[in-house]
Length: 217
Image (cartoon, rainbow, N blue to C red; front, side):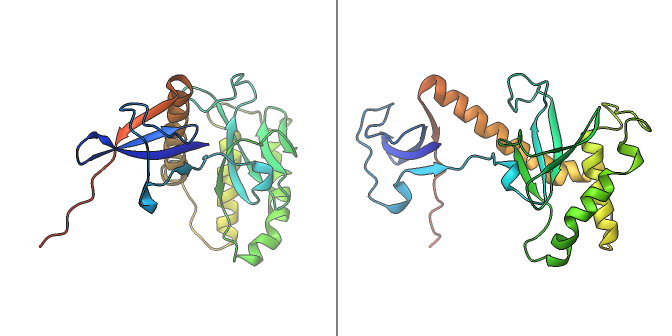
């Protein structure tokens, strides 16, 4: 976990945000003791953007591709997508057809697709997913996997649009879904991993903390 603390000593009236892998008693920059007298100055743990996909039901999952040997989420690494059912089994499309995996997605990005109060959809989700996965377009005998036009993301997006159509909703284009759902989470992951890598190398990371605007008189 990444811990965030504040230091006000380095420059008068200017706070520094300190990100570290542990709570520190002293500021690594100015050496002053870190004492938070206010609640907002207390150490805060920044949550990881990664989840266990097998414990995330009815979600779109993004994980490093199987041939991504470093298993990271760097901007140049290949990623793989899948859909989880209500029991945490991950359906994902590969060159060998649709796989149903109960392990291997323990560290991934999870995007919920069903609200907890949508009981009618939750009750049918597994049936929808299984029936869709058995379609001929995902059978390698009938249609081959293509990295650009017929891939794991195609499987996920087409399944989601099948469900939306069944629910009387409009379909999503690849561009809209990527912009609204994928990119915001990938940006968060990129910031988090960059921060963690810096902390692992330097032991801490400091940034200027935005000052609160003074109330107008």
